[in-house]
Image 1 (cartoon, rainbow, N blue to C red):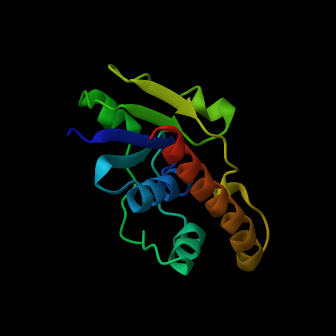
Image 2 (cartoon, rainbow, N blue to C red):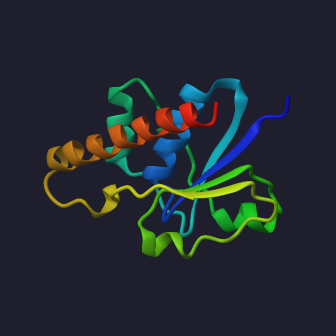
Image 3 (cartoon, rainbow, N blue to C red):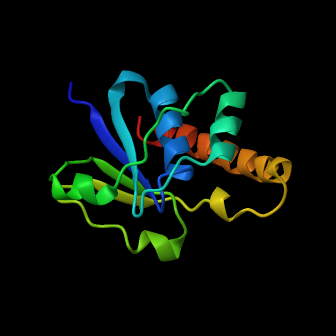
Length: 142
């Protein structure tokens, strides 16, 4: 059986798309081939790395990737899922042969103000929202 190919896209590939990729790898098992990418790849958000480690998921060695590299290489995906806000998702390229393009809106951890601890509290909320959405989506596509 061919694996279902999924790419999660956000602005910098530093937070939301990385979390979504990690959760789909955790809960989707061998059924999926999953990656993530950004419109303007940055560096991994250290707050995100820490809150993922709190629940036993280590993304600290992940690299940020450009969505346009996947696009230029003609990669095929069954699902292209944007996890940025509406204004940023409009900048995402259309992939040829995509079965389904979806948008899930989550707050951007890089925009959070406050102390490191305050940012962690807000980022945990986004992490938990993404985990719930991944689990719901897996139930929907069974």
